Length: 401
Image (cartoon, rainbow, N blue to C red; front, side, top):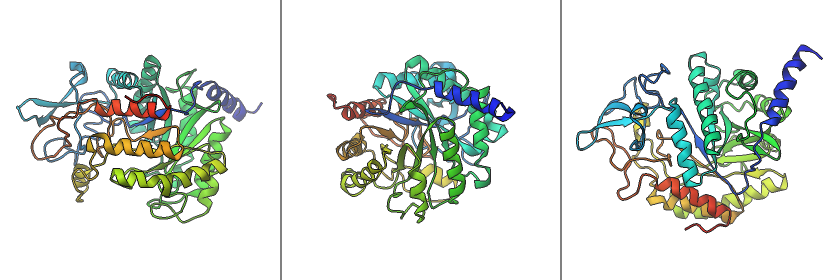
């Protein structure tokens, strides 16, 4: 056996063992960013994803919604320069804290959320400066999933990745399995049709290089590794317009996948529009996929707002751009997906505070001052967790109340 085969075969065999007995049918999965850092958390990345312009203080912030830290232990909390209306110091959390990640997965179990797609940004995976903290987050997610009996799946996000560097992810995947935090058997890693599932996000968007040859190589690489492949694609992938490249070759690449998941965040903004999508978008999408024996995983989201984030980039964006409406907007999307024929959904996101799509516990008493934060008076901190659990019951035809 050649040296190359001696390296590849153990990785392939290990990956094939790493399969959960759970398929995606009837499951509600969330995206999990895991990208928040605090000064002093050991990662050495400052207030990453909280800060704007190198500072995390009133008037300079990237997040739009404030986390509820009431259940967090003192050692999980990070004090900030923000203050609540009564003068209390406002606190946040770090995603590299093992106890906090475990707590997030406990919330998932308590709410009936089946698992997560852990985001691993390709540009960071090949960056030695942040690779260690990415590994810590991955290890924490893996341990928490096992402890709370939730599933997890790795999702590579290729946003910002230069096409000529995309193949470096092949080495990242192999390293993770050979001697990294994915080494060894993991019965809670998400499987699909008897294979470990890997998600590749960012194919076909018209705001970046198409890189179709590089994408095809990646898809075939992961299939060769014994994986099932999920592709994160633009909302209008089927019609090849609006947010999508106008290249029919895209459909050829999507046909190589096992699952397709179109990104719907920000593409519509009312329950009425969500309902209209059942006939105009979802049913035709699902029919296209069924003709090719591909599973369709629709994306649903609670609302959207990125005023603070865009301000940090020198741009204007309306605050509370897509209101949550107490959960009515999220629920309307789930109902449309179910009626269109889907039996699983991807909820964007569990912990995405930057764009105001988080469904984990958030506070209705955020800091006051120069930066606005989303509030829904009368809505409990765990409302969207519980609502997401209800969506799972809806998908499985179980009583939702």
